[in-house]
Image (cartoon, rainbow, N blue to C red; front, side):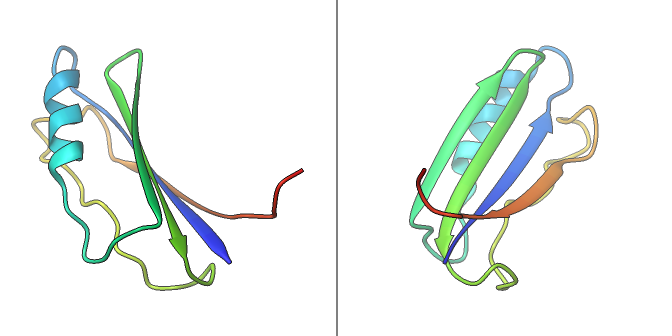
Amino acid sequence: MTVALMWEARAVPGRGEELLAWARAQRLDGEPVRRETLRAPQDRVLVITWWDAPYDADLPELPEPGTDLVARAVHRWRFESVGAD
C-alpha cells in the first residue's frame, strides 16, 4: 500500500521564502518513496511524502516550524492510494 502524508504551512507575511527553505532543509528519519515540495500564494508551503507502508503505520513527519515563521499551526493530512484510474 502507498500512503501519502501532506504537510502544509502558511508563513508569516513576507517570510514565504524562509519557510520554503526551512521545509526543504528538514530531514526525515527514513527515506520516503517520493518527496515533493510545492508553494502557493499567501506564502504557503506544501510537502507531500509517499511511503510504502500501511495506512496506520508510524511514519516520520516534518515538525512544526518556529512560531516566528508561521502564521498558523501546520495542517496535516494522510491519504492512501487507491490505484490509477
